[in-house]
Length: 216
Image (cartoon, rainbow, N blue to C red; front, side, top):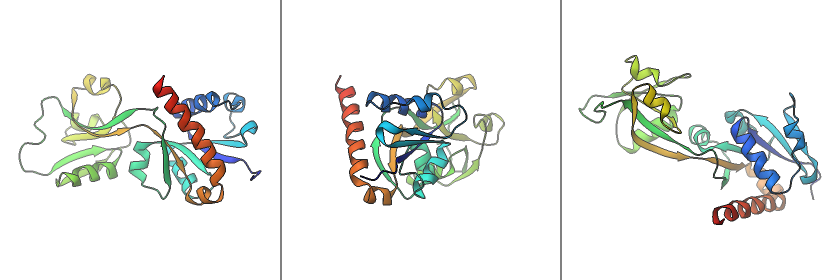
């Protein structure tokens, strides 16, 4: 057995909390994560694991470059970044969706002009409209993307939607779902070869727990 801990990068925030809950349900002592203070690298010694806390895009970067063996990240970030790694398990939490939204009752698909779409996720947006063989102009927005159609900057937006409340409060509505999203367990391609048994054992435990919860 490799004595170096298996390093897992977790997306800070809700996915971090849900993953820690999952690890604890498998019997791992995650006290160090609960009592992290400002620390970003945290040992789980009873499982020979080490947790690294990072932003979603950085989780992919760390796993892709092999400084972390595995990671937990939303499917939204995976779709946008398209890194060189394996997606092993759909963890089932962090559920939401990408959706195309416009101002209420706006006839988005009418006419032949090129539509303008605002999004934090230009690659996801581009792929979605390419499948439809539609030409669109994409404007990347970093903040509240809902503003773009309200200010007349865009005909519509592609964004993550959980409940749809924010859209409704701003006079927008979902026109079409783009993709379903949830948290995924990803792994570095080299780690999967070099530490296959450890990774497969952990994945098996996780999958059994997810299947058990589904059946319950």
